[in-house]
Image (tube, rainbow, N blue to C red; front, side, top):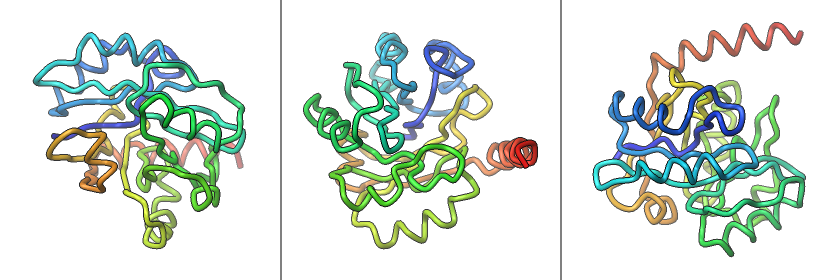
Length: 205
């Protein structure tokens, strides 16, 4: 089962509706997606109508905690933003979900950094489709972290969907918790995205 567990819809800063994302995900051969909009849960709940035996939709959210971004998978309730990261993780667990440190060492977006070692995360995102510049550093650091490793596209448009995904044999949440995950990448999509990111970064210099 191939799933993109980090995506954004038009309910936050993504370009496409949950329905459009599901249809495109099926078209490119994904078996499921997680909708993880920034600080809103509506898109994820909307997407659940497309969950079926043949396609898995995981509800989720990307919370902007006080110290950085945290993915919550398997939840359908909103979590307050700008509260301490530890409280966000606790809240995700209370709601029956799993907490993943998203792009923890991203130099340009908010990652939790070394809090990764101090908070009870369930997994760490070691490959992120929009954080290519820190992927090498992150995979090196990941060797010292005794947490399950995952990857996601962080897609904000259809073209990015599936650039990074995970492959699991059974239930995605349980597979992540047990570390039974293979991270896969679409090299062609990542090359296109890398070119875009390099141009964007140069614009800030």
